[in-house]
Amino acid sequence: MKYFIKTYGCQMNYSDSERLKTLLESYGFAETETQQDADLVVFNSCSVKQKAENKVYGDIRNTKDDQIVALTGCMVKSGKEDQIVKKIKKLDVAFRPENMGELGEALTILNPKWAIEDAGGSLEKYFEINPKVSNKYQVFVPIMTGCDKFCTYCIVPYSRGREKSRPMADILAECEKLVENGAKEITLLGQTVDSYGISHADKESGQFKGVNFAKLLREVDKLSTKGLSRLRFTSPHPADFSKELIDTIASLVTACPYIHLPVQSGSNSVLRRMNRPYTKEAYEKMIDEIRTKVPKCAISTDIIVGFCGETQEEFQETYDMFEKISFDMAYISRYSTRKGTFADKKLADDVPYETKAERWHKLNDLLRKTSTANNKKYVGRKLEVLIEKQSEGDLMGRSREYKEVHIKDFDGGKEWRGELVNVKITKAREWLLEGEME
Ligand code: SF4
Image (cartoon, rainbow, N blue to C red; front, side):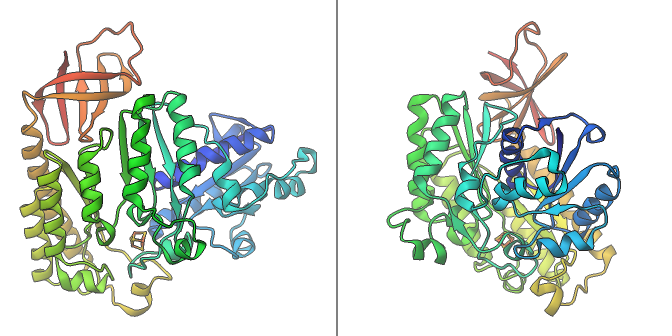
């Protein structure tokens, strides 16, 4: 009984796959390196763009006839599992990640020889599964599922469902276990991670009284006494990024001076069409406050260019904001319609492809400049780096500011992965830094 999981998309999916590995291994499966060798192939899908879905369709078509093929992730909508199995040829079973505990029964029906006993398919059970972490030093902990924000271009609230937070005691217990197992860096995950504990469903449950994201950070930070060095989170939503949260980040030992805060556009009219409930001015003020209270904090963002009806003037507003803030990094995408969203049904995707491409290039050229200028400020400084990769003649790690740092001169006879080292930065490049170990 061998399994192979192919994961697409965001960190959330990678984290789900780690739980799925533990579950499958508890059923008696062993992981295999190649898809060809597997009896069971699971595709953990992303549906953020049509292109991402098409890739999954193609990969399912390429499975072998004697393999059992399962689909999970964002392409599987709650209550529509059977529909998608009927729709995709070669697909045998589909399940929502939070219902993964029900997979055993479905697999036993498909192959009675496997005779698997179900673990149970509730959200609570899903969170009880300990992830099989691929890197024990840097771990990811989901703290919520779903999203209530309904940005007009986004499918997530429909695919992942409404926002629901995970009880704080469970999150803390998981973090503690991971730290005891050697974790030095924890990244808390959620579609809108800073909305932790405040959704309608959370309020109704009554479990989150007096609890919010800042409080959760303060509690996780206490694990610094047990060996936790770094605390990160992704991705927050500007509408819920409170002053209390900024003050908390500024005060904690483990909170890293790096914040990825998706803005999507620097034009207020575009933000309104996107249903992003903040203004460019409010966003800029927030960044100023972060930089004042968390000195030298690196900032990255997400931007969509060419959203429905985006005029040249509206794009220029985004460009100007981008230049003013001088982001360290940005994930810039060209808008494409996602079927089933509000924008798909009600707004015209009317910015020509060439215009989208031109705006995308302009912003990326600007990013090259802002990233290089920000990186140059680190030359001569000492940074703490957590080593992630080791190859002949090169160590790669990240600083607390999430800067990629490369070291060429080191003792190759030693295992460096997972080590925290002090590095003097000697060179800045567009996307990375180089330095010498102290
Ligand atoms: S905040 Fe908006 S973009 Fe992010 S997951 Fe929710 S709906 Fe999608």
